[in-house]
Image 1 (cartoon, rainbow, N blue to C red):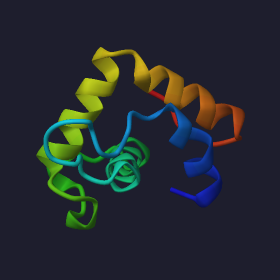
Image 2 (image 1 turned 45 degrees about the vertical axis):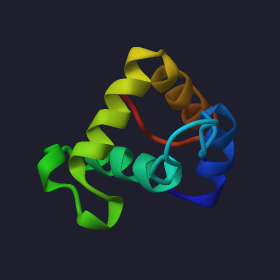
Image 3 (image 1 turned 60 degrees about the horizontal axis):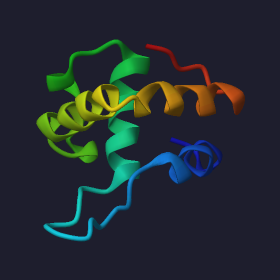
Length: 86
């Protein structure tokens, strides 16, 4: 994920550190992992470990889809000229 892409979507994301509980895994790392899977067409399990555990990345993707955040992220990236879909 480029710095330009990150600056487009960062304001959409929930706080990195919730008011209660443990801090979430780094949003940028997780989002980069999601984009890697989408752009490569590979399975979640094939995702490089540098993006964290595939299970964590997949769960975050599912959560963002469920709450309607993922389409908003895609829209922001598309406005910025990024070639991402799903």
